[in-house]
Length: 71
Image (cartoon, rainbow, N blue to C red; front, side, top):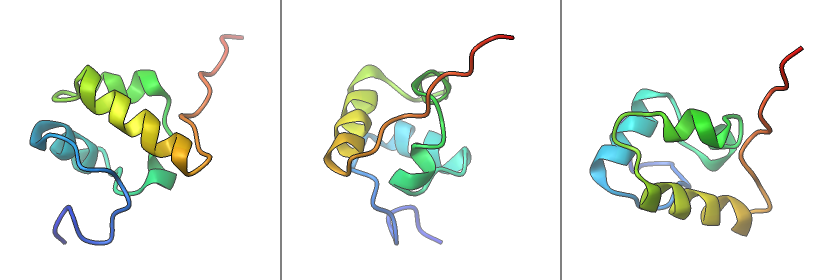
């Protein structure tokens, strides 16, 4: 399946797009299941792409997952 088909993710640079695809993140709903720190740690993900993703989540009333607290 092509990366840009059936995805509601915003357009980001190719390295960030590949990083998301390789992590199995192809929709905003799937993105919202991850913390921002997890996504930021992906190879190819930069600050501009993170900002674009954060904005897209907000437009759809979604957010990154909350970080898990240590026990």
